[in-house]
Image 1 (cartoon, rainbow, N blue to C red):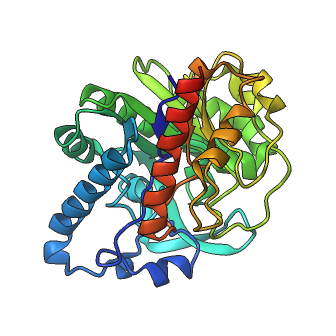
Image 2: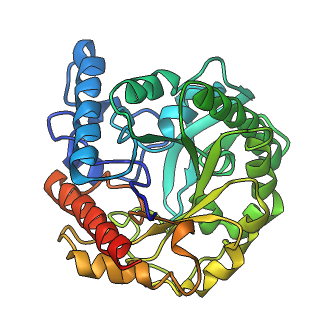
Length: 338
C-alpha cells in the first residue's frame, strides 16, 4: 500500500553534467551536447555509472518503484524526440515554450517515424541492476508536437498522430523488455488545454492503443526551477478520466492543489506529487504524510502512489536524497496508521 516513486528524473551528478548551464536555460528540445562534462569517448560509461548511482540512491532511500533517473537525458523529451526520423535537428526551427519564450526545436521535414527502439537498452540496464518494480518514462506525442516546428504536415494534429505511433511502438517494446510501468510525460496538456482537447487527447489515446502493460500519464505545471508561478488548479485533468492510462500523475505540494479534483479520476491510480521541488530544503516526514492524508477523502490509499511533484533534475543531490527519504518515511507512518 502507498508505494513510493520518483516521477522520473533524479539529480544528475555535477561530474556528469554542467548543472549551472542546465539551470540557466530552458529544457533543451534539440541536442545540447555542451551540457556534458565528460569526454564523448567516455560518456556512455559515465552515464552507466551515474545510472547505477541513481538506482542505488532510490533503493537506499526506500523507494518501492525505481526509475533510471533519466541520467542519459539532457531533458525529459529531447532524448526521444531527436532520435526520430523526419526531424532536422542540425537546422532547428523555433517554437514558444510554455512560458512564452522562443526556443530552438526540432524542425519537422518529413514523416515522423521511429527507426529503432530508443530507450530499450536503458530499460534493460535498469532491469539488470534492481529487483524492484521499475518505471520508464517517454515524452508524449502532444507535447512533442508542441516542441517542434512543423514544416511538413498540414497541421499540428497530423504531426501529433505520427508522434503517437512512434510512442506506441516504444511503449510496447519497453514492456516487452521488462518495464513494469511506462509513463507518458504530457506537461503541455496543462500548458495548452484547448489544443489538448482538440487533438492531444486523441494522440494520447493512440499512443496507448493496444498496450497491455501498466501505463501512466504525467501532467504538471512545469519544472519548479523554471516555471515559478503556480496556478490554483489544473486546466486539463478531468479529460484524462476516459483515457486508457492506468495511472495519472499530478502535483499537489507546491501548488496546494484542491484535491477535490481527484473525484474526476475515480477509475485511476493517482501518482500523488507531495514533494515541493521549488525549495531544496527537505520536508519533515510529518509534513509529507499530511500532504498525502489530504487525498484520502477523495481517493482510497490503495489507489495512491506517493511521489515527487515533478522531476528532481534541478535539485542538489543531497536535497534529492533527503526528499526521497522523507517520502519513504511518510509512507511508513501512513501504512502503520492504516
